[in-house]
Length: 253
Image (cartoon, rainbow, N blue to C red):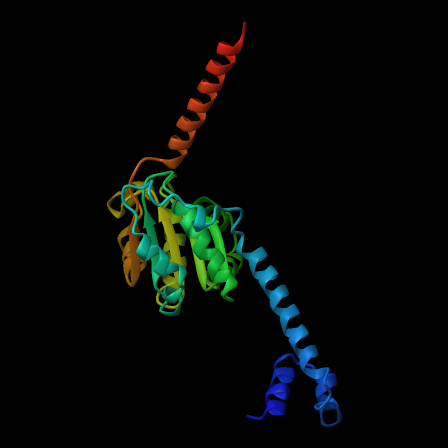
């Protein structure tokens, strides 16, 4: 492909029909290539802003600031590989298992953000938000539209599965969603409960075994263990306040 053919292909991709209509007389102009570059950069910027807005990732701590030494068990190599996003190309699921305060949500947010930066569509939500949203819909048509909304992103992150208990209807809705995404798009789950405890999260739900089966089929499961980092920070802040009080008391005449 010649340079001029390459420029024309870029203009076609951008749908610059006015420019293409006068291509024979304008193709050799020195301003054409910068114009295309500016348009491509601006569209990429707007696309990134739009995808970030739709992802609802929220504020998070970058992994560069993550205290990898705090969890007693955390496969840093596996998490680094997930940041490479290869799992998205094979529609592999990711499940982060561990007690509260170990950084599961932070890791999930970093992976989601990385996916957006690389052009993927992402939706980050909590289990409560997702399931209550679906369960609140009365009509079948509205429910189908909402299920399509959650089934569409390249990466769906469902945070905090296991912190609350849900009804049989909630379980059925989650199964329907996971089944729609199965082997076509990746789902990332964070949970504080082992799979053997999910019957307590979704009591009386007959689909729990099938739900877990869909999730773990072609899945990367990473367990985090240790004490809550928030408890650690709370202790450190309490110790700092105690030292300040002692220092103030010691300097008082």
